Length: 439
Ligand code: 5AD
Ligand code: SF4
Image (cartoon, rainbow, N blue to C red; front, side, top):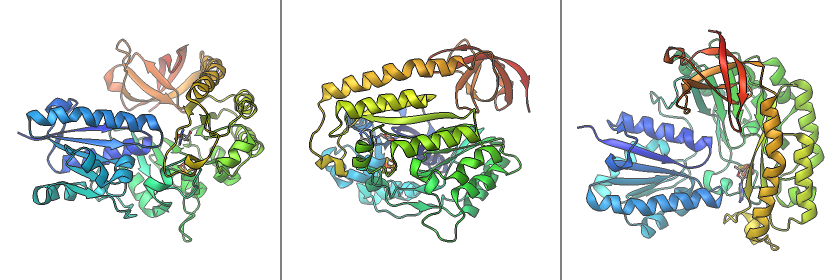
């Protein structure tokens, strides 16, 4: 009987995509996927350390796995940022883990697993800067929407952030290789591509011969079979006018951007080493909206950064009111050693952080709701890329502005672009009726 694998993923879309590769590589070794960890022969954890919460969740999941291993032969591997950071320490702390593989070691998974038989425990956490995916491995959980990693790592060293330490310095892939991968995916029927990187809009800066990110958007965006293009995540300081203009020039580029601002106070932005001011950020928002009036803009907010006064915090609140984001992701600051802010004095108490987080949500919730309500009555293009999680509805998909829409539809429409009239706005999704099939 074929052996089964189960992968648990924490964190961002980069991690979700890395898990797609892990799954594809395991399938290549003859394993088949299972949704039940109780029947898996190998369990992989793809971990995240960007904030305390996902890290704690990974530790508690790992703790519980100890009991599973008592009853049956089971291989447990830990990858991702926690694996990169802790390395051998994880094997020492939790002897039921068989192997640990870092953020640059994913493509070597088959080799690492075969080493287990000879060596017992294995820990591989070198930064290899090997970015080219293995040929013939197709990493996609979804048949119609696919991710392509265009660069790894980050050089920005925001003082709160662990990413540069666990993902290494910025390295961009060659544009020809990105274009080849995109064409391969499109030939397989993919309609939407999402270009991924910790800091996508500094793409190419580490390679003199390479094209700019804006040019990459033009080249990928104009591939004949592509219907939709998105990218994630952008740093405000690297959002050039040239890039902003692609929202107008490139028809496939969806009207949506995630642009983390983190906070609204210039004093705190400086301490965070973000290298833009509140005014710079607002100017970029204005430019985006001028070039592309219908663009949906989302952001990340951190509350309770060390030294954040009530006055600083009020500026975050006023920024939310001023920009009127389509949606936000807000977090309480947590220390992430070895990030620099761990050493900053004037830490903010948990209670105040919780209060500020609640205040942020209170201000944003009606804005998000109103932005969703604006969609009611509109006819929007939706790529039906999955079965609906709402039982009574048939399929779900996303609008170009990245809203999730549920519709009643036959499974035969899966993978099609349709025009939907929006009937109802819920807090995190929309509902609608199909007006016509577009392809
Ligand atoms: N504490 C809280 N939030 C953090 N983020 C990154 N590091 C921290 C930290 N130490 C948030 C930022 C970033 C998102 C991915 O996670 O908002 O944009
Ligand atoms: Fe972290 Fe800043 Fe790099 Fe984003 S830009 S990954 S927040 S260091």
